[in-house]
Structures are given as structure tokens and as C-alpha cells.
Image 1: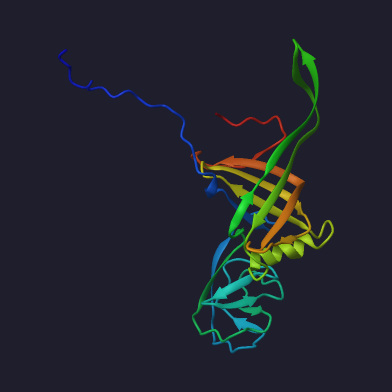
Image 2 (image 1 turned 30 degrees about the vertical axis):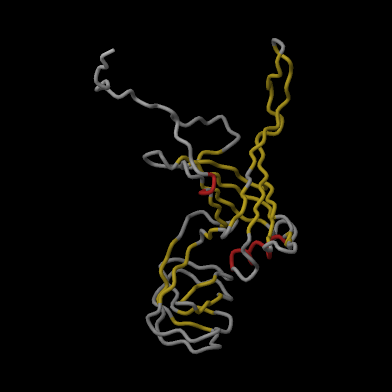
Length: 243
């Protein structure tokens, strides 16, 4: 039988795309944070090892106490809040000298490093009844809820893990924080949570791990980074964004 040429028109393939779950990332924010900040901090005069203050050019944004600035490998931990425009930072004794003109980047969006597993779980609390032979939600009794699990092989010598440990060893409201989960497809969850007690674990032949739980204690929102102008939508309201 004589074969004909391959058809010129190639059929459109509209099979939905799939995304790697490995690319899910999570970030830790201060519970009171209302904006995302990324600012460059530049030193003025040289700061010697063991110094407890650093001169800087006017800060482009406020930086809270406890923030850690990395000046070329020398970590400076703020011991007091620094206001926008401040030119001096109070820090714990520096482990090394910092040259004039050295820079560090401050961001209030701190990625949780070396994550083995993130498991945010959105749950519904609804009364159900059998309608036409099937279970059907009929009334929301307590809206939406979220719990999350964070497992990482990073240790307490990482500043973000140290912050999680500090939060997890306090009772509410001292353990309050905000978590941002960012998925590879552009879906994001932002939640105010209480961080659970740290659970360090290890076994022979296995890398040490830290595990934290998080339970919703405030607002829960979502956004789609594929939108022309992404915005946060509350989870648990009747507001419906455009499809």
C-alpha cells in the first residue's frame, strides 16, 4: 500500500501541564509584617571585631531587632530596632571586622532552607447532609482552616531555623509568625500561624532533621502569580476573583 505524507497540520495538545513538587518553597515573615521589603545596607566607617555598633548610610527601610545582616560572611545581629533613615545599627559583638562600604541585603522574606517536606493542608469545617443519596455540604460552621508541617535538614546554626526554634519554644502569642508557601505553578498561600514546638530528630546513618508544625491563628489568603496584577484573596469569604 502506498503511504501518504505525514499530515501537515499538527494537532493542538491541550493536555494540562504538570509541575515539580520539589520546587515548592516556603518563607518566614514577621507576624506583624504588612509589606515585603528588600533593602541594601551599606556600612560607613570600618567596624572592628567585637564592636557593638555599625555606622551605615541612611537605611532605605526599617529593620527589626533580631535581623541578621551578612556583610561578606561577617554576620551582624541587630539588638535594637532600626528606623528608616537611621545611620547607626546596634548589634551583638561582631565576630569579625567589617570594611567601610561593605553591603548586606535585608529582606523580611526569609526562605526556609533545605526543606525535605512542606505540607500545608487546607481543611473545611462544614455540616453535611445526604441529598439525593450523596454527602453534600449544606452549611459552613467554622469556615476554612489550615495546618502545615515543615521538615528540613538545615540546623539551628542557620538563622532562619534558629528563628523557628525561638518561635516554637514560646507560648501564644510569642510563637506567632506568617508563612508564605509558593508553588511552582504560581499558586501562593499566606497564613498567620502559631509555630509548634521544634522536633529535632536523628538516627544512625541518617541526617539530622528539624520538624515544625504550624496551626492557623489569623488570616489565610491565596494569590495567583500568573495574573497580570497578582493580589491576595482571603480564603473563607464569599469574594470571588475573576477567572
